[in-house]
Image (cartoon, rainbow, N blue to C red; front, side, top):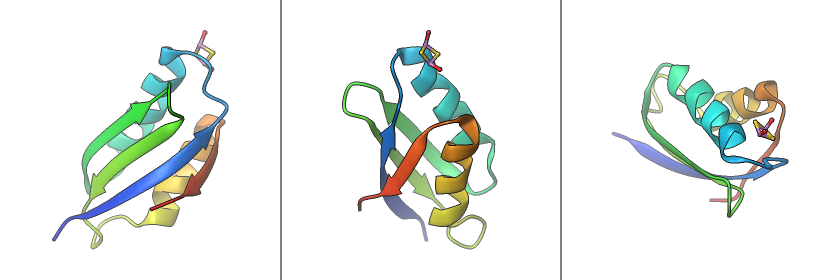
Length: 72
Ligand code: 9UX
């Protein structure tokens, strides 16, 4: 079954920032959908928990150079 996570992402200042975060999340295994919203500083992710978890996704966002906190 898929799970849903919403992250607060700190430090994105243009839409290309959001694009690079989205691309990095989508490169992980077990991601169904990733939508990064630069205006609201959010990342919405649908994923399969048997392949990837919230901390994997959070660390991936940070590896791209942004702060990430799970909010829901
Ligand atoms: Mo936009 Mo983000 O010029 O690192 S890509 S600020």
